[in-house]
Length: 248
Image (cartoon, rainbow, N blue to C red; front, side, top):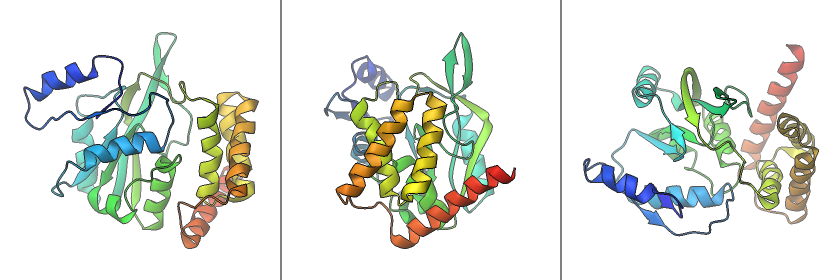
């Protein structure tokens, strides 16, 4: 999927498509505004619509990644060993001072939105991907709700050329708080999550943006991404994780 790129993406992909008949390029002209969530998932679905149902694992990869040569082979081995494995991935690394370091924005058991791989049955059971900010969190939560395992392989270092959020504007940062509301986190968990994210990014303004987004979504009665039962499961899971860190 080439979604309004400004570089040589089309030419590069076409050069590979000429050599390999399993590679196809789809061009999509959407807004050049960088908003996480719906924009990127809409692009994913444009590609998904061209596929048939003959697949075992489906991947959603960003274009700004450099994978180890054996990346897909390792994922295939993981899925082959565990029938209940629903999602699997490696870790994103970013370049800093001429060194590649872990892009440490989330827990190590969370798969980053840039490099998702889903077992077909899990992908379908969670209702595929949500066209909303927070899609890359709610997919894992719903997978756990439905009894699927999630695996992150620390030996798989993926180079992420464009650090997460570098192009986000204020509107997109509000969407993070909106997503917490739509996932039925509730005020307390949203507050803790917003403080944690803002601390990692060393920005109090981001904390204010997150909370503003949450309260605006609540005021506007935006539709939830999950059912009441799923929301209760998600809150219990989040509290378990939070309280577990205090015990540790």
